[in-house]
Image 1: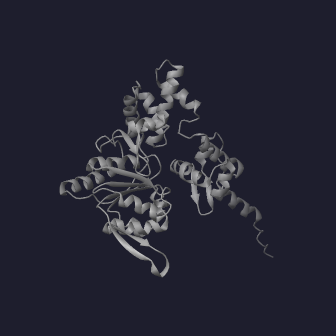
Image 2: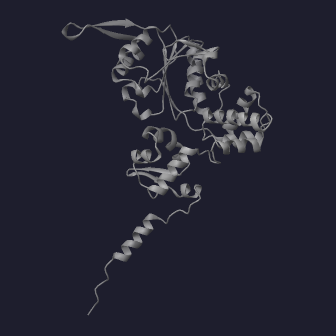
Image 3: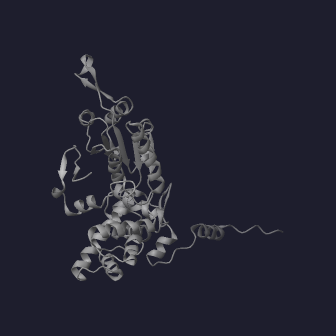
Length: 360
C-alpha cells in the first residue's frame, strides 16, 4: 500500500496521522515478494499462486497465513494485493462482533479486491458460517425479519481474495480452514536473515550501521523481524542521545542493556517467567494460569508472547501436567540445575525399600 494504510473499517488513514513508530513500520515494510527477506519456502509457494492467477487473469485463491506474531503476515497480505495489482481491505476477527459487520464489509468489496482478516480465528461463529458461503460461492444470505416470517435474501458478491492471518491455527474450525486454497506456516527467522533485515531497515532510516552491530541486534531479536526493527529504532535513539548519532557495536550493546534485552533476546517478562518457574515453583510442573498470576500477566500473553520463544530455545517444556523449566533455564539465570528428577525418585525408592528377609 502506498501513501497510507486502511483502517479496520476500510477507511484510509493518512500516514501523517499515525504514531511515529507506526509510520516507520509502514515505511520499512517490503512491497514486493522480491524485497521480502526470509521465509523462502513460503515466498516460493505464494509466488507461484500469484503468478498463476495473474497469468490466467483470474482472482487468486484464498490464502491462510499462520505463525507467531511479528513474522510478516500483514506484510505478506499487502504484498499479495500489490502483486495482483488490486486494492486491499483490512479488518480483524475481534473487530467483527456479529455477522452483520462481516456482511457490510463483504458487500462493499470491489471486484478482485483482497480482504485481509487478521486474527481470523477470533471471528464470531455466525460470521464464520457466513464466510463459508462467501468464500465458495461469492454470495451471502441476509436474514430479514424474525421468527416464522423471516426470509433469507441472497446477495451476490464480487469475486475477491481472502487473506486470513492467525497466531492460533489450531483454533480454526475445519470447514473454514479447508476453504483456503493455499495455507502457509511462517517460522521464526534465522539470524542471517534478520541481519539482512536490520541492515536494510538501517539504510532506509539513514543509520550507518556496521555489520557487527547489525548482527548483535539480530541475535537479540528472538527470530522476529518486528522485534528486530523495534530494537534498531531504540539503538538509533541511544546513538543520537549518547553517541552523537554514531551507532557501533558498543552502542548497540549499551542500548540493549538499557532496555533489558539480554544476549539471547530475553526481556524483562521472559526472565520474570523463568525466575517464577524456577524460584517459586521449583522448576515445575506448574499450570499456565498459576504462572501468569505469579508474573502479573494475562495467561494469553504468557502463552502467545513469552512461551513460544522459551520453548523454541529449549528453556521451557510444555507437558500434560504443566510448564517445566529445563537445565538451560537454570544455566541462563546463573543457577545450578537440579539433579535428574528420575534419579532422585529412584534414590528415594531405594531408601524406602524394605530389606530382603533373611534365610534361616
